[in-house]
Length: 143
Image (cartoon, rainbow, N blue to C red; front, side, top):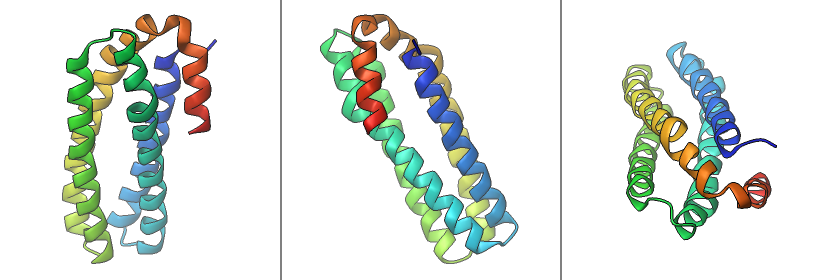
């Protein structure tokens, strides 16, 4: 059976790919593809955040998992959402330079965030939720 770490890391990779596609299109001034790519990225990341915030985090905390790392992840989600909204504005204004600057900032935040989740939070979840893993993954797949 797939672990929480494997499932959520695969979700990170899908979001990263959509992000890279949107960024490249914006930097190429291909605004039609940039808009499609950005919307795909935003949708994928919103789904990923919902899986964590609506399913994983509450279940982990209920099982006695550490609250501190969960709180940090939630704060970082909010930070990323702010950057995404700023990216949407640069996209609407067809501002390749602004988009590029914000996307670099978001990329750094996402890389650090994903590393913390993949190296720390998800393995903790795999440990605390071992007996509930199938139920959790089934619920997240429906999300």
